[in-house]
Image 1 (cartoon, rainbow, N blue to C red):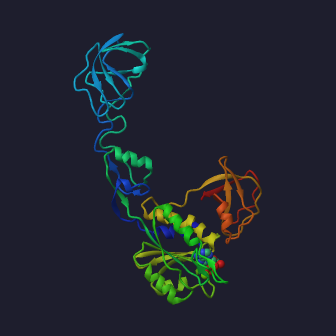
Image 2 (cartoon, rainbow, N blue to C red):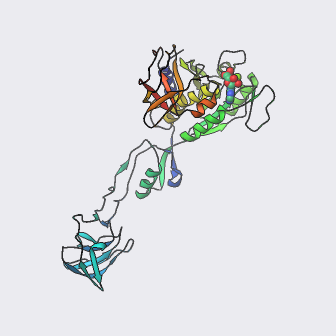
Image 3 (cartoon, rainbow, N blue to C red):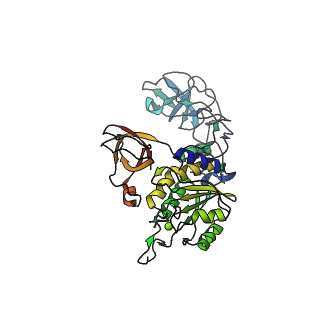
Length: 387
Ligand code: AMP
Ligand code: MG
């Protein structure tokens, strides 16, 4: 058994950063920018009015209104002392104008305006390049958010370099499994973590592919691995312990998998394995539903992020304050289902059996107990991983 951090090091060594592909801006949300991109123009491209009002060049009591500048329709002349140009938000500030007098500070009579309010100090002019200048960068790597998409559009970028989506083949193993919606036999259960992991992979921006359920036979597993060809990552679920029906490690090795490790000192999730299988990375997850999901958060998510070029770092941890006492931990790092609130209070569930998805469903964090962590009291800080 190796510690979690060592297992992660092995996984990062196996996980390639995937190549770049170009996608239209409209499809770039959630993708990982793989090369920095830069603006080809200033924004705004011209000095622009920040308000509706009158563009003037001096401060006076009254002005002659000589024209209008609206967004998309600038005023072509220039403004001299005593003159004003009616202007609207986003419109180009005419030549010669140095400030905008707000429309609420004037009274207009025909083509005259009289200043009736007290103009503020601000010029209400956004200089050219106020937002960003030509050449300004959006640095890679970065998972693109809707805000980034707006910025990229303003930069006039319509095609974006992103890392290819990791393609992940998911192989569930076990004679007892049927798919959700099917009618299980008396000894059967529904494949559950398969769908949880698929959802996790969707959230991470990977391209998961659910393969048909594999039986606990060499031939069925061999067929499943065959169908997984072409994936960047093959994830097996179950069959990873050392029981008579746990064939995954053996079959994978027969098919040429070079094993990097098998078994990690953690709870839940001990029978984790990984290796290289042809051109694919292989990750063998335990079958217990919660173990598989916890390993998804602790190992699979960082692997996907590494493949996307977001760096090789463990799932981010924060800390929270226990609301109650906890007994001491054993020799394995324990990821305990827990809830944490906005005030940073942490409550760990009493029931931690690795088969209890209902408890996982109520949890929004995993409280992390290091190996041999002593008993803890209410008020102690614990590291957590938000899930
Ligand atoms: P295994 O690692 O194959 O020994 O499986 C451990 C436990 O997890 C057994 O109780 C299996 O029935 C269960 N299990 C395995 N795979 C899945 C799955 N995809 N969905 C739900 N439970 C599973
Ligand atoms: Mg099994």
